[in-house]
Length: 101
Image (cartoon, rainbow, N blue to C red):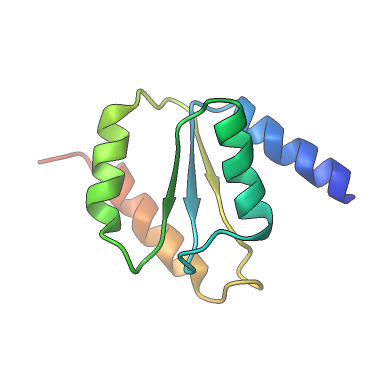
């Protein structure tokens, strides 16, 4: 896919969702993840970046409670760019899907 097509798809994903969750291993956004955050800011859509070095469970819980999210855009780097990011993604989504007790 061309860079232009990739950016258009990324922007559409942000636009067509209620909120965007960006999951990375690196605390600093780069590449497509950084573009995703820029689109969310420009479109005034809720966006949260989580990484393992932070208290991500509290941040996630608070963020989900603050926003009425029906359609969630989940973004982040490919496994080839950040090895082991998939394990973090599964951990976060598992936490997000469990109802509060």
